[in-house]
Length: 327
Image 1 (cartoon, helix red, strand yellow):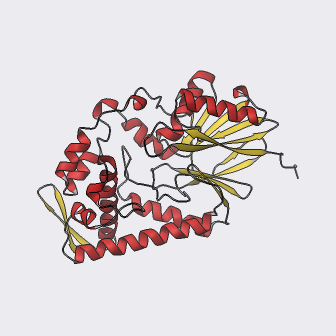
Image 2 (cartoon, helix red, strand yellow):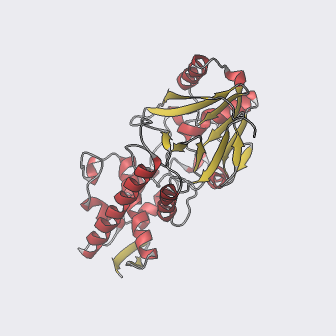
Image 3 (cartoon, rainbow, N blue to C red):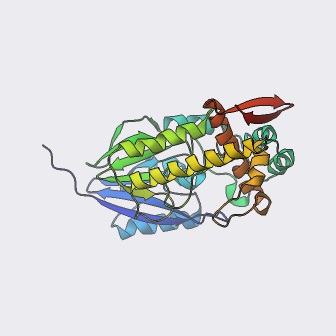
């Protein structure tokens, strides 16, 4: 039997230009054969300089990077990868189902074009208008956002310089989200985060029931061997099985709350969202900024759609608004 390669894994926290999410964790797995990068961040000069410094601290340089794996195509994970692929010819790999949102992207269509009609369906026309009026921030303009060199499929095994990494399909946060497992560790991207509940509201081309897929992807980590979490945001002191169960419990509680609010007389996702509290500070919907109001309402909509699919609620259409009642 061949001896496993010796390896080093480093977490490289990279700065983000976002107002409320300031760091993304890139990871570098290094062996004698070179470096495999995971989620190398947003394509900014500051982030690139920090990434290069992180490689140098491991004893590597840019030319040692052999391949880049990205858990999903959100810009805080993917755009630096595209930049280095284009400039340096490094092979770039991404989950196959991310092709939907990449091919659907059109900067001229607006910042959140898919979300606007869904907000109208959710009974939130004023919020839909506010989202439609959002403009690209300077740091969001001209981002490299094209297809990878290789589309990954569930169950593939990647050779990371003599270290085997198994690809796990984990749709939910995005359609093509992947987790990479190796040596009792899991690079979990945004699927499993230590403190944040990942949003399912940012897709350009979402699937029909993203919450159902997310819950199934969480269940996967109750069935797989427990592993140390190496998430894209937050610390690395957590385990996959425990965190997956916490998130399943959270969504089970949220489904109950939302169903109870429909029973109590709310009829739309917007009405439900206004009766709930949000964030760890228990804020009302109106206390949130426009984008966070959008994600809150769309999260409720996703839960309502799942409850309908389970036969627990009934939905009808009034104009272009989805109206929910107890089934």
